Length: 268
Image (cartoon, rainbow, N blue to C red; front, side):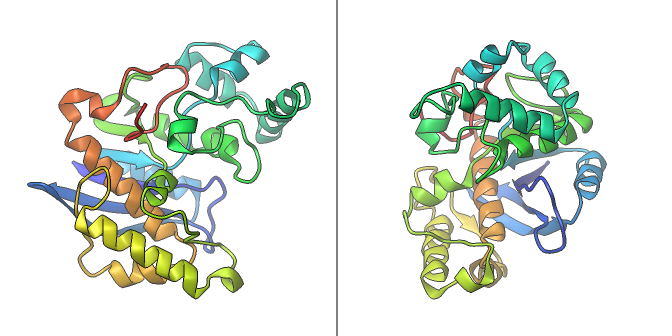
């Protein structure tokens, strides 16, 4: 069983690929075995389909807020909702998100899932800054195309488990300092030091998830990556390892709204 942390993007390229950190759990320590990069969604889908057994913690929302779904009159069972979303283009999904915002007053423009606030994540209906709704639209069909099981939401291959993850939740449990930027001119010394601080805590197991990570020879690569993609993939891998330790307890997931989904490792 491969453990994987997936730093996902809805429009991968050579400049901004999908980055996957792979690892394995031995005793009570997680070992980073390497990074894989995919410059297209097709490449990433092929990898998911080729690997026979994996647990992937993925940095993308798996669903939308119930309030948003009900407001639009969309299906309120998860499989039917995803089937409906696959019939929409990205532009149509953007328009649906904007329509909800336009119809609601300031302070209520965005609907939130139950998991969003405790995790500190953006509402999954946001279509810009960051475009997480578009990431959902692009990424979930790839997981389902690989017949992945989404615990509590969709049954598939029991050897391919996909969990929603949010690396920012882990990073902010260590420091509130900014640690990444896609613009090279903003990849400064302060952000490098923040990545160093986060990585050191992860290596020592000094996070609330309590799982130390051996980065082997990849520590410098992670620190020097100013985009933070490698670090984000590693933080997702940490959550995958934490979930694997709790595979007999529903991967550490609490009781949750199975239409909305839940971010693994997030406390109620």
